Every structure is written in structure tokens, then in C-alpha cells.
Amino acid sequence: MQCNRLRILFIIVFIVQVSACSESTVILNNSSAHQPIDIKNLEITLAVDDESVISDSVKELAEKFNQNNVYGIKVNTDISTLPAGSNPDCEITTDYNAAYLYKTGQITDLSHFINNQQWGIPDWRKQFCKAVRRQSVYRRFGKHTISVPIALDSQIVIFNKDILKYLGYEKLPKSWFRTNILLFKASRRMKPVLGLQYDVKTLTALVSARGGSILQPAGFNYSMNNPVVTGTERYLRRLENYGILSCNDQKYKNQTDFAFGKLLMVVTSIDGIEPYFKMINLIDNKMEWDVALIPTRKPGDGIFINCNNSAVIYSGDKRNELASWFFIKWLIEEEQQQNIALQSNTLPARLDIIPNLIESSENTCAKQWNTALKLVSGAYIESLNAALYDYENVSSFIDESITNIRNDSCVWLEALKLTRKINKCRRDDKWLK
Image 1 (cartoon, rainbow, N blue to C red):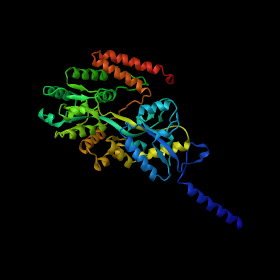
Image 2: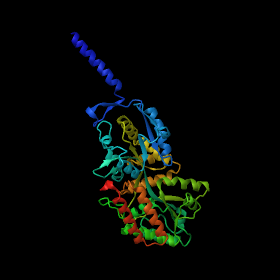
Image 3: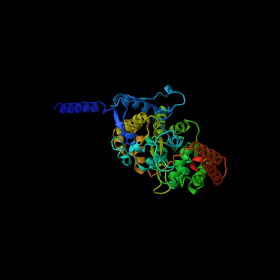
Image 4: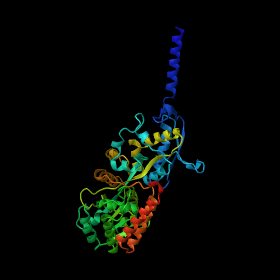
């Protein structure tokens, strides 16, 4: 009898202990002997670039997470407290930088977090479209999910409706052929007509809308020397030579010219809508303006989606990795996704929440921003912005080629030089051999 009492007492004590620590311990499937990991009251560091459009909203959400999460995890966004030479626990970065970090062994593969039955993301494929998931995967020696998208970007067109009506158009044409006629017709009244930042991101979006890809991998050999890329370069150079295209390197030149009615249309990103909205209101211009998708060459060509804000977890203490995962998973829940999108005017990483986001939108430039969200979510194609660990080198090569082409260098020659430079860059990388 006394033995049974001791057994019952032991079971009660065990249950009390388990219930006391259940909220602060979890079991990692790949941990040795499935030992529970205690993450109660753990402090982790988060690095986010202050120049990122989502920097302020992520830091505010980190404070909210600190107050509400059941584990008592504290997210510290002040990385100046880190010892010299040490990494943060997690970071919001670009997809191409994430590929570099994984290649150099600094961040961990997130697959075992995502696929965990207890606290993973069971509807990972439903929450993120294929184009977004592909940018989170590192395809060297197998598929490794190395990042989780937090916010997206896509290039769109902002246009002056008053000028469009004056030229006899009710809406912006959807095809390049009709848009080309419109640009030349408008150039009789005003020069320049089209404004854009002539850089890698814009060129990539224009090439995608014309049915091609600037860095389409084929066994990870990249070629710029293809008809769509060279054709797009020739087209843009011709527009610039005719005085129709304005390639502004100044930060607010396009916004100012558009606000004063000097440009018919501008190619920009979704998070770039707000600066135009503010500039138009600043000069008190009563002009009518709206947004549209970049014109396409044929049906099926479409929207280029870029994961320019993705979350990664640095390799290290398993407790810190797990705590970082819970914070990242919390960031992609619907409420937080809406918060980030509304504050930063970005495209949410989860396209499935866009209908609810539009319905509850309190954005300052709600009309144009909502239109952009509807257009992009309804017409995107399975695009790929290749996660290049050597993106910085490739980007500088492309910028150099663009400058040479604008200075009347042959497009096919620059494309050939660019292909050779990219191939040499990859041959010099021993990791690919």
C-alpha cells in the first residue's frame, strides 16, 4: 500500500514538473536523444538594415513580441551590444545575401523547422506562392530552405491619367506594341515621357515583362546574351536617344518631374508609390494618377516578384536557433504581415492575405497602393530572381554593361562580355567545382 502511495506521489510530482516547464521547453526532432530544449526568458539578437523599408515596422513588432510571447523570449534589435566579430542570432536580409551566408556556413537550413509537426509551417506551400518559395531555396548539392520571406517587392508603372486622356486614351495599354505607339505620340507634346531608374532591378523586371529572364539558370550557367535581354537593351537605348526615356540617377528627380506633370509614366517598385503620393501632395497638384502593371509583349509574360526582405537564422546555440524560429514564424502570421505591409507600403510575403489587407487598409495612399496589390497578386507568374551568392559582382558587371550601352557600345558585344565575366566569376569559385 505504501509503495503504491509513493508511486502515485511520484507521478503527481512528475506531472507538476512537466506542466511547469511545458511552456518553455520543446523537443527538436534532430536533437540528440530528443532532449527538450529550454528557451524560457532567452534573449536573442536580430539584425535588420536601418535603410530597409521594413526596418521600423519589424523593430516595433519585435517589441510587441517581447511583451506577448508565452516563452518570455526577448528580441534585441540593438546589435551594437554584440561582441566584435560575432553574428546575431537572426537577420532580415536579401535572398542573394542569404545564399552567400549559407554558402559560407554561417546560417542554418530551416527545413527541419518548417517541416516540424509540432511548431512548423504545415501549409508552407499554400502560404507562399511557388515563385517566392523558389527564392528561399539554395540549390547547391540538394535543396535547402535557407530563408523565410518577410516582405516582397515588384515593379509597376505609375502614370498620369490627365495626359493619357489628353492623348485620347482611357487607360494605359497592356502590350508593349501599343505602349510604344503611346510613348512616341506623347513625345510630340512633352519630352521626356518615360522615367525609370536604369539599374539591375528595373532591367530585370522589364526583361521579365517582355517574356525573358536576365539570369535564368540552366545548370547554374548564366547567360545575358539572349534575344529578349539584348532586345530590351536596344529598345531602351533607342527611347533614350529619341529623348523619350529619362534615366535619372538623382534620388527624387523622377518623383519631382512626375508631380509637376513632366512625365507620362514611371517604372518603380510598389514601396515606391508613397514617395510619389507625398510629392504630388507637397506641390498641391490636383492631377489624376494611377498605377498599372508593366506592359507585356504577349499574354503569359508577367510580374517579377523579388524577395528583398527575408529572414535567416545563424548557426550556433540550438536554444537561440529555436527561439529565433518562433519569432520568425510569428512575423509571417497574418496580423504581423498586414502590419508590415501597411507601414512600409510593401507587398506582403503571403499573397493569400491581400484580399483581407485591402479590405482593412488604412494606408495613406490607399487607392493606388490597393490597386497595385490587386494587380500583382492577380497577374504574377512563377518568376525567379536567382539567389546569387555572387550577386554583388554580377550586379556591378551588369551596371557596367548598361553604362557602356548607353554610351553607344554595341548591345551584342556588351552581352557577350558580360556572359564571359559571369562565367569567369563562377569558374574562379572553387565551391562549384
